[in-house]
Length: 88
Image (tube, rainbow, N blue to C red; front, side, top):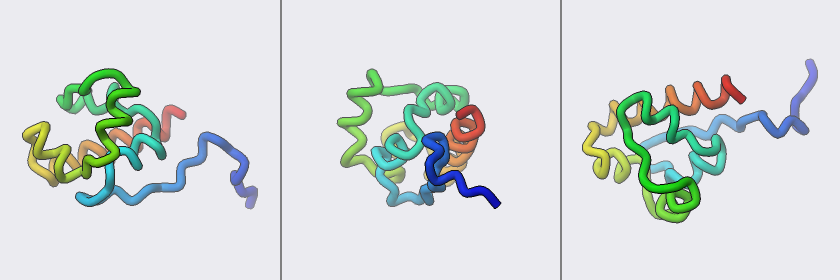
């Protein structure tokens, strides 16, 4: 089996929970705002602004801010990062 350690498109499969910082998701998967909009979650500002704001924002707090039940938001995030990983 060939390992893809040097592959920059390889994702480490960050476990996304209610306590995961949104900045960690952006760091691992890049900007997933386009995908999240498909699920009805509007983006907040430009990517650079989101990176700054999300340093202190957990998934649980982001769900609250967007007024989406936590379990639904988690499902949306999982689908968004899967879509992003597939497109990379």
